[in-house]
Structures are given as structure tokens and as C-alpha cells.
Amino acid sequence: MHLASLLFGANLLIFTAVISHSAAEEDEDGEVIDWGSSGCVEDGDCLEGECCVKKENGETDCERLRGIGEPCSQPAENKTLPERCPCKEGFSCSDKSDGVVICERPKYQHF
Image 1 (cartoon, rainbow, N blue to C red):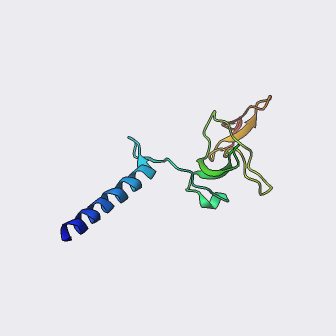
Image 2 (cartoon, rainbow, N blue to C red; image 1 turned 180 degrees about the vertical axis):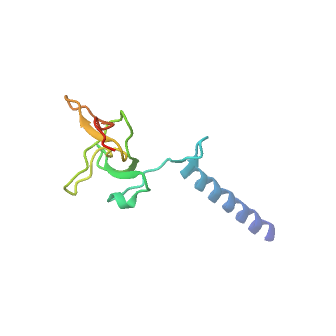
Image 3 (tube, rainbow, N blue to C red; image 1 turned 120 degrees about the vertical axis):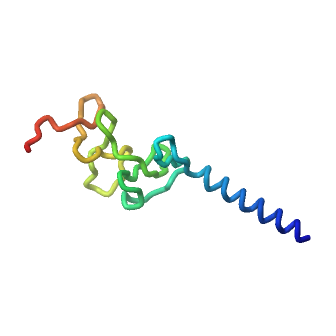
């Protein structure tokens, strides 16, 4: 009976470790890869450098702020969640026509 309890406890610890490891992993650069939806309500629910977006299927998730050349959304003044995050600091979200909106460096920067 004592051996059965020890085996059960060992299996439980292994199962917990496997589940924890599969939910989030680090890539070769040491950045965290999150394999599951975080389900957010506002940007404050997300990590630094992320925003809360509403997917086409209606679910919400945290995504990273967009970089140069990536599709983006203008920061929303009303409280609706965008489909894409706005640009990282230093970039602006620019409408290139025909629904193409990407992050780019401002044309003129005054120092």
C-alpha cells in the first residue's frame, strides 16, 4: 500500500510538470512561447509589449505590439478591441490604401 502511494505521488508530479511545460515554452532565444489563448478583456490583462485583440471567431487574446512592415490597427479611441495590435513605440500605423495598414517609421523626426 505504501509503494502504491509513492507511485501515485510520483506520477502526479510528473503529470503536473508535463502540463506546465506544455502550456508555455521558451524558444532558442529564451523568449516565452505561449501555446494557449490568454482570453483578455483589456490591454492591462496582457504582458508588457502586448495588447488585447478580438479575433475573427470572437475570442480575445493577447498579441505582441506590431513592428515595422507588419499589419496594424490605429489605437482605438472607443473601447472596442482591435483585430490587430497598434505599432510599437517609435512607429506609426499608416494606411497605404486598399485596406493595407502597416507600421512604419515616421517620415520626419525632429530631434
